[in-house]
Image 1: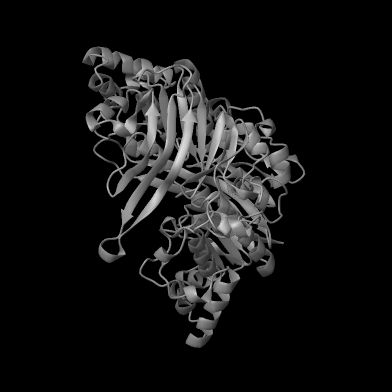
Image 2 (image 1 turned 90 degrees about the vertical axis):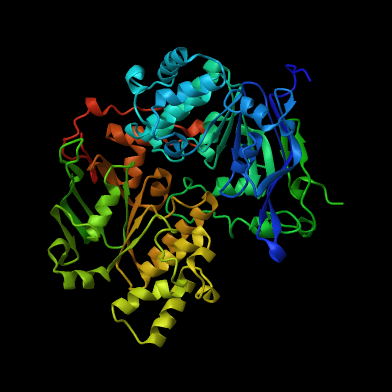
Length: 331
Length: 292
């Protein structure tokens, strides 16, 4: 199948990822990702937002096929650059991972190998993917460290990860992720472990890299402030499903789903010293989800039909969707 | 009336010599002074390595300060002998950041909350059980959860247990070190509300250590901004946030990404090399000090 310029760079349709928990009589499956569909166009940034356990990281790992047993992709298609990644064998997938799709994880210390210099680690992916011979790869690594604005890149290339600060490690990791000029970068909470002033620098860097290398970005975060600054579009996840999506400014200024509204309203800022508008209750246990909408038990707009079956994906406009009966006429 | 009066607090950590380097001394807290009035909520903010957590731990002598003085009401805390210090601890309690690591996984929730009462020899077994039930209700936990182990609770509920444990001895001062930073956004708001309710109901004096400026602005009446072991700016939260005087405070405030990009102040970069980091605090407006 040839890839054309009209279809999205990444087109995930009905992705479902399940984990087997328990064994014998108590064996059951937990659906961490339940029918997720999302698209990322070339050069576009999609912010995938949600709280811990909502399935946003499992979605990312599923896309790059790094789900390990007892986890398994049980349904859906992941069409990337015109090919369905779910149909690829592991050796073909290895040529996609790192080369066509780069990734940056939350904790830069664990994502880097402590016994190799950062220059070697960046050069390695170029050599492995056959993009450069050893000496050329080494020179390219220094260029990449310069591109991510690490001072004295030639000297720093010889440093081990522990010799760098958290912010510098995250820069090195971004350099490694973009080394093979991927078309898509997946960044999973790339600034969560960092101080706020360092976070601001890394967000600036991601924005620059996106423009300089024409990258599309799938940005996974719990921080609505971070998506507001970097994402063109937002998809909000709750209990394994995307409950709302649309252009960033529209979703943040006029949230359609009660969960998105609740998240925004619970942020401090409006009136200091007053009680915050907390969402009551807690995130549901994925292995014991209600039959209806997973958010219904915490929702202030709950109706009887919310408990019957989960709401379907409803279009609010050409580019906005939600899963909520508030936007479906009763009948 | 100031309940807390910290004067010239210093904490040095020394690194022992290794085959690769000589011994060195790090001043994690470098001459910190502040007062907190009774019933006030005081915020200590800063990034990692600023010394905010070390300041809190020194005050409760969970680690021993190198120099300085802490007057807690009429008590000179750093001069107290061990027995008197143990008694003083009844009156000042700490809530920790990580609700997963700060609760003993082998103890039931009720026993965790009761432990302090036993150690300080308070009440009969029946009175203690009643007090634990009362505390559970106070922090919004069900009595049927008394016999559960920490792993059976969510992060937000665990932080409620940590708060019940801290309040068991009816302290007048609670030092909370990043109590909500490990929690999800929707749960953070619940716990912040609980802090506000309890502070009012029990007339607590609260020192809230945090890196989240939005939370501090919401919760605290006064705030001190720390950078590399020193307070660089201090004052009423409103004044400091609306009219920051120190370039580091300005940089910090401008770095927090606002969900409403229109409300984002222009980015300010703090240049530590161009700044006099030894400058003493001076009054820039009534009740508002900055080290400039």
